[in-house]
Image (cartoon, rainbow, N blue to C red; front, side, top):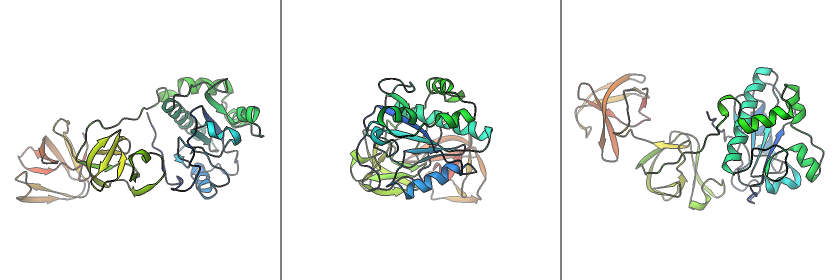
Length: 321
């Protein structure tokens, strides 16, 4: 199981520290703000942090409904004094007002920590010697300061330090195996964005959040001309990630098993693959049973039981089963 990351409050190009962080520590916090524990507590914290990043910020804030990114993972954030240069990921656990909300936010918190520990090859050990996951209390004891989080807040909801360490090591429920990023190994001619995607002029900048040339909202159709180092080059020359959490093949492929699709915004039926002989149209929400997927140039068509064809564009006819 994985969770989507909301980037609505991510720092823009030119904001935040431009230094790459040494991959030694994942630093874990709680917000310490019991005045903000109602609905959307993480959203409120992320919005505030975005506006006041020049004072302090971390990479992520988590509650029971969302994971918000503020700082760019891999780069230095300003949440733990002199330990900052050694942490490519720091995360805040937002306060909540019920046991059920805490459980959900805590599950997301553990998943996110384990995901980035796996990504940066940082041991899943808590407050030990050497590299690993470090509490803000550990930072205080080793680098200075006066913060002792997140243990007081975790304890309030029945999670001891020992339980926290165990959950970091093994995961909580279905989070026991952190999700690894999956990338395209082949190049579709057409792709679409599944989340907000940043495009860059230089391939080396992809994923850094620095020197962004353009931002594409979800469900943007893009054409590609190259695939290199887990990045797609678009026909406009810009580079985007080939991570399947962010982009997907726009057209169904003949190898895919598609039985039923549903019209997203209305669709037409045609007698021919070239779509020159239109027969009729159908409104949004209409379902179609598919016999097979037929490749047509850089696109595809869905053949129906009566021999007619509809578009194989996933943003026009979405997969049902």
